[in-house]
Image 1 (tube, rainbow, N blue to C red):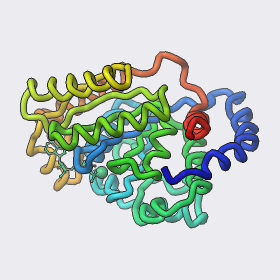
Image 2: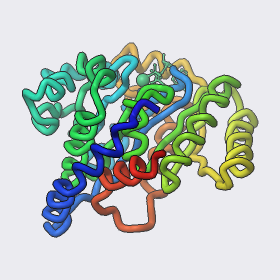
Image 3: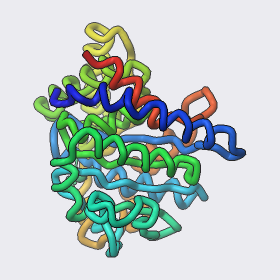
Image 4: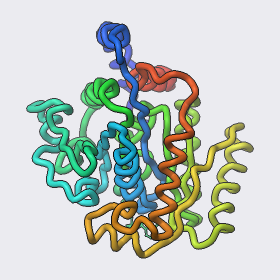
Amino acid sequence: MAFQGLKRFTQFFMSSLGKERARRTTRKGAARARVLCIASGKGGTGKSVMTANLGLYLATKGKKVLILDADLGLANAHLLLDMQPRYNLSHVLNEKRSLEEIIDVGPEGLQLISGGSGISQLAALDEYHLFLLIRQVAALEEKNDFILIDTSAGIAPQTMVFLYAAREIILVTTPDVTAMTDAYAMMKTMMQKNPETRLSLVANKTRSEKEAKGVYEKLDRVSQKFLSRSIRSWGHVPFDKHVSRSIVKKDPIIRSFPRSEAGRAIANVGKRLLTDGPKEPVGDRLEKSFEQAMIGQG
Ligand SMILES: Nc1ncnc2c1ncn2[C@@H]1O[C@H](COP(=O)(O)OP(=O)(O)OP(=O)(O)O)[C@@H](O)[C@H]1O
Ligand SMILES: [Mg+2]
């Protein structure tokens, strides 16, 4: 991993962060958001569709939700939600604006930090600036119930930074053999670096119940065998042409085609997300878990 200097930076910043954290955690209503990264080993598995829909689902349930589009491949969350954000990550990375300033508000009060043209810059950021970015995201924890981070496929360092920082990851895979192999590789990397990660699997574009069950069972089996832990399933979403139709309509499927197979299935994932959360109280965590993962790195 190309982050040899990160450990040094992390330690260097711990003292200043400690101060800020102490200030935040002693304040009433301190950090409380559940931060979930939506990840996959292979591209095109349906992460962005899942993120936009889950975000909207949670928002319709009255939750305060922020989506951070950190997809290095193609930042497209705003397109899926029919939003035209004025600012994007590039305005933060150029240090002209804070993350909070560039939040755009969409349907049902859903908030979005768009990747936009900031994405190529994100890919080039050094560890110091990535760390500062994580710190800004962490500062938004106390203002939201959920922060959903849409990442790019694979294990690019700029993606892994977010995966290390989040305590919860929704791993999206299709039944395709290469997608499954890449999903396992990603699980392995994440669990080795951050063993506390709460990993939930969503099988997408499945063709039958049986196939969906097989996806979970295979990944769970290799996880138990080689990583000595089980993964949880948050269900499956069938292949459904309504998904692409909802994209054309720029209206997430849970709203545009709520009774379609995929629409209902994604809403069920949303229900699982709401009911299957961490037991321990949600505290100040994003920077902390990021630090822990980095310090644990060889
Ligand atoms: N359940 C589904 N049924 C049919 N098509 C789907 C389904 N889920 C996603 N798709 C299609 O798969 C394509 C990729 O979806 P999406 O952009 O969400 O994937 P992604 O994982 O974010 O991709 P990337 O890795 O490029 O960011 C889209 O064209 C979408 O229409
Ligand atoms: Mg995507």
